[in-house]
Image 1: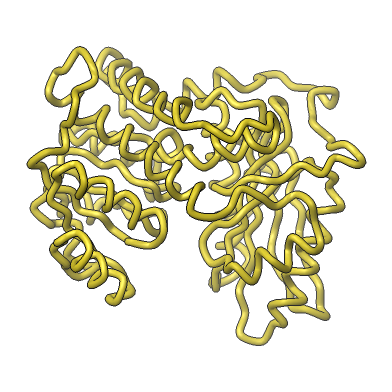
Image 2 (image 1 turned 90 degrees about the horizontal axis):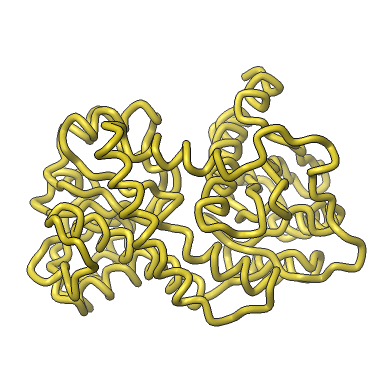
Length: 363
């Protein structure tokens, strides 16, 4: 990868390479855009194959966070920390080192939990930096609420409903891929609304727990794509929508909490041609960011009404996609980019403030 060329393509501000031989820490902090405020985004820890895979993931995720914040009209931009998990590292010391790197940015980058980060990691990080926050069940529930609202918007659009329907979930089937913290909350809400739930998870124990809790049907991770469902709800890793999986899909709606669901943006055209409604992931999974940004930057702890506005944003995107005969992911990208500062100067960048001890945000 030619890093500067990749950064220039989407106007990234900064990529910080992380290395500490004593702890084995390797990774990157990617700051995409701070023209609306500090960069918010989670920490992802994975056994990446190599540094290029980690950097590519960080770049995509950081840009998605900027778009997510812009679409939610939040006073912040997007960033991401990606850490290469290793069998021979000292995890505790690596987290402490990462925390100190984050603290040195003085709030320019504020963070929280993403895939692979444990409660113990968070405890250690908080001992080293003020800029980690918005964790726990509360965040998961806000993310789940946003996904449900985005899904509701898609179902109402398919039904031609002019106004939000009371309960479009009764009697429909949703295939939930991944029943971790957020996937579980989504499955619970769907079950309570009268939907039939099909689940798959690489951890069969979680899938069986969902079977018991929600009378869910369990299928293998390989079979979830072709499950007989109205909605496919990806709640695990990104990049799961490919040419192969699109050919398998039986659902008419894709709406889930995973980041970067499309393996390639061009796949939006394939979905559009097949008549599959795709709720852009960074629009509908923004619940935790909306809550975290409001807590961190405004001190506002009750954010359900703002998260429910995701319904209106998705309906707008679906309407514009229909009018412009374009895939929903491209429509969302254009809307988000129009809200970022197109011609920023060095004076537009957010550089943090000494003594600022606000928390971060997960995503």
